[in-house]
Length: 367
Image (cartoon, rainbow, N blue to C red):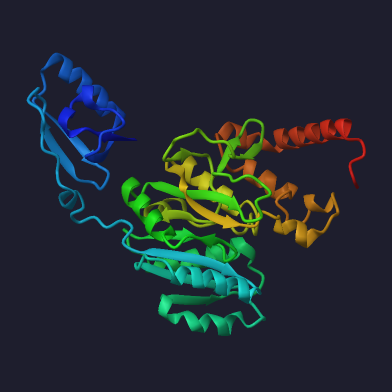
């Protein structure tokens, strides 16, 4: 499916061009081909266009233009996706950070919001602080203290799934992010435009202004390589990516029903969001980043804080994004099946080759 703009004055194929101002519609590429063929031969009497909200409209295939497009009200009849946003926020022992985040949510101009905070065994007064935000339609879910990000997000998703209708959507967020007061409203509008079969992410911005912003991930399954997309094509409203960061990712009830929840067993902390959104793309859903919707946080890697400066420990720590086992689990489960099935042999060969190249170019690598 492709999103285009229609100029109501030139509705037929010669007028299908970016820049029309009266209606945004989703048009099947095969349908466009048939339209061009039919119009050229002048044999068709009618064609059907499906608007992104699901309204189907029948138009005469004739040269008598313009045709009447349905009004915005007609296009939105019986459509309110997402009807409600259920925001899941894992927290653990940083009450001040969590409070700042919830204050930011309270300032949002979007009203159809429910917040599920998964408090994973905090002992610093987080539980008492959360009671101040009952007016935010906030539900507190208590964890064991051993969930980490993956387990907390999965627990929240399982509980949210029981509360969601078919027209609701789930929003992943962390409590250490900063968002604009119109963040939810902008995200809702984009989701309403694209529909429930699209997973939507945001531009990730470094609060410390040290590292460049990124817009999701590109995944090369052949070379077992994941790269942050820091230099996307210019002047695009949407950027198609292979996977998304979990900070500010919106997923519909339809997607969750189809692909399940975050795999916290195999990815307890890092890789969980990348694997989950890559899974969505593997199963036929579109994954996009809206560069105009921004989530800000400090990019200082939290795994470095936990494992210290030991270079080799990062490869075995369960809380490290460099963990070899978690990397292998990703490459053996995602992407084209022939590549996933051969990951057992390809992945160690590729990793060893890269390490050898680094040692040759940098023989003084700290141990």
